[in-house]
Image (cartoon, rainbow, N blue to C red; front, top):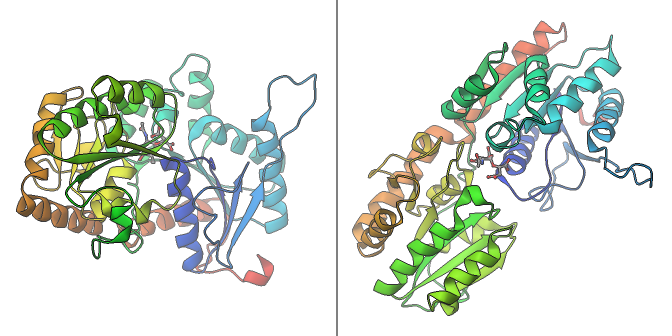
Length: 389
Ligand code: GMT
């Protein structure tokens, strides 16, 4: 098959998942054409010979004071479809990718281009439901040939807020458990982050209000009062300064390390003794799932799709949104009990491997592709010839 994948290149779960999906499909013999306005952050480490990257050019003209990314994207999708003879297009994050895909589909007619839209979370819960977007998001969902959501919770949210006519199929995210492995041995890498006697607490996100970074800080303040520990914050975003202020006001600024945006998180996550993720809501939680694959215990909020990923007390701890005291107690419990941490970490990796490995999840996407390619009157091919793209 020749598959087009549209995604955001920026640090975040939807771009990470879309890129990983592309590289795994390519490893299975399909040709994958990734379309984005920059090289996606997870693609920069090597593309493989069946992965092609197509950059969406941005137009800069003084009259056009607002960028028209959606239009440039629609045109690029059309060009790639014709040049690479795409069998299918899979767009990640509805806004505006599903709209651009539909535009491209119309421009390409009568040539068919089946479209799969994967809803990731904030494209529905925050951006998509805003009055400025809601009608067009609903329209683009209904125009897609198939729509998937990364959790049951997100599917239910989509139905509640958009009442779509199109069926929403749940295909959970997958985690590459080969890439995300437990720590092999303590050593230099760990010492670059913390002293030997300190416990490492980690959080990764885009530091947006939905991640409740202040809760991360409040939980850590309580941990730091009880044991030598260090908080490693990976990512960047609007709440970075307020987090730094909370650290300063509580006298723990020297215990908090801002690492900024990192693309090789598989080498950092295994160094953690605990991963914190107290989000307001979260459709899936790819970052905590990757931590779990590294056998790192997670303390998270019980909101959104997180309970579909984390089993309370078995593979992590869940508490109500904003319950920082409770989360701090859970964190202290697991940080202070090596047996519990090991048991929980191992159970977490087993659960991720058993439910969300590429081997479990990819067949669902391939079945869906087969269904809609066949319905469009095209032939589903198990592989593609590289020479013909
Ligand atoms: O978390 C974000 O704000 C980024 C966003 C994205 O599109 O990259 O993440 C969403 O998609 C991820 C991949 O499917 C999910 O793991 C995240 O839970 C989801 N974020 C939210 O729902 C807030």
